[in-house]
Length: 246
Image (cartoon, rainbow, N blue to C red):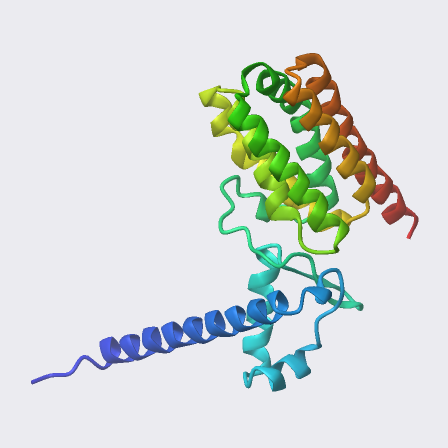
């Protein structure tokens, strides 16, 4: 019987790669669990690569890959010369719009808001016209929960996304439902670059949107959503100017 040494070598290499991916995935899960169990880390730095290696009994290259993966999912951000910071305690599971290929996050956030300004005030207007009593109760609950999480210093992003998705659903427009990934990506990208800088403005405008929808005030809902997005867009422009001055 002849053994194909090349085939055996390929199998061994593939097995090694598979084991490697599994190890990185395990360490990634452990780091995420550590972050979730320590909510005070949100907005702050995690330990350095050496300390993480000691903590999770893993090689530094494995730690580096796990951190890179969590950064691509919006949980961590590596800031050159400053360390690795926690942006969120949850991940965005996929990237349906393939926005991760764009490196300039501020410019991407600005362009996303330009698109949201084109469509989301109209979505809120339709929601005010079509929302049922059950829908209004759900939007109000989500608004309350975002506010509570934001004020307590916990990660509010997932709940914020639910709030905007619910409003989109209330438009009762099937095409709008297909645009939800755009809204989700925009909310997540904005949260990653602003780091909770618009706490009071977010709470106030969310409340204004909710109240207008609950009154079936379609013009008020449209204006409140527009104001919400303008506040956010202005913050992006401010951060871009600040970055230029550095």
